[in-house]
Amino acid sequence: MAMNKLQRARRRTIAWIILPILLLAVSVYGLAYGSVSIPLQEINQVLLHNDESTYRTILMDLRLPRVLVGLLVGACLAASGALLQGVMKNPLADPGIIGVSAGGGLAAVITMVMLPQLSYLLPVTAFLGAFLSAIVIYLLAWDRGASPVKIVLAGVAINALLGALTNGVMVMYSDRVQAVLPWLSGGLNGRSWHHLEFMAPYAIIGLIASLFAIKPANLLLLGDDSAQLLGQRVELQRMLIILLSALLAGTAVSVAGLIGFVGLVVPHVIRLLIGEDYRFLLPLSIVGGGTLVVLADTVARSWFDPIELPVGILLAVIGAPFFLILLKKRGNFG
Image 1 (cartoon, rainbow, N blue to C red):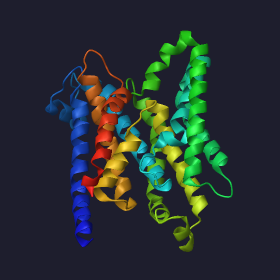
Image 2: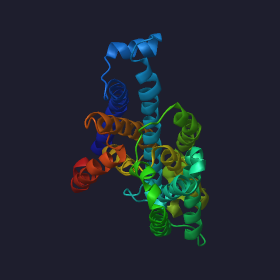
Image 3: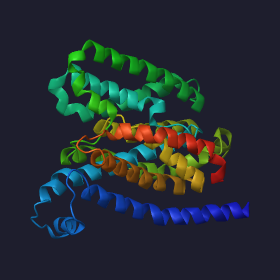
């Protein structure tokens, strides 16, 4: 047992060193590569010396905001998934399990297809749809308490209902579906400073609030009875953590569309490597999520030139088999 603790402590130290370095390297990679490759010295001149380079427009107006949005999207999705997996005592849970993605998707489709004149409100409507769906699911699961099993079952049912409604709207307005498909696929194409300015306040508030959820999340891992004996208000804390997860995932969905895999696999992989303790699991998941989304987005827009593959599709194609391999080899992670 002592050796196991020593191994986990060593893994945590290694993760704290490697992940931030990897995040920085991936961010530079995202700035340097695309349809036009930019030398590192040019990036340095533009960012640090405000040089009027020929690459300035590409870096400052296109790639830098896109990388920053990707970092926040990945961080929010990973934090949301990590919290949900703990509060539901299910390492396979992710933001979609409580209907966040389906709620945001339906609200976005209605806005883009039925109310195109309000398309400038898309981030707001997608966020509200995601947030409201989480509240409805929690209320449906409530019966003198809302157990993780009830929440999951209610989430599955609401996901199916919202998915059917989304498909119905798209069938009824089939002549306008083309504008919706890229958003449903999930991607960061065209994301600008405007999108960053919209999502940053919500993302920063949600990520900071998630750090205050570390202690209750750890206590909930002990079980409801044990947490209550320690003076915790279990139902209130569970509801607040779920709503916080909805805020984080809804913020990401509102800007990047329906990107999957991140909130599921990133926290799960880190949990297998370093254990359940949220003091380490949550911040490392935040860094890992941002790293994964920026890396996947850069690959999606640079490796398939002249086609830009939506990052949501790439993550799904790579993520599903990768996750199955992880499940198969789970014992090797200790």
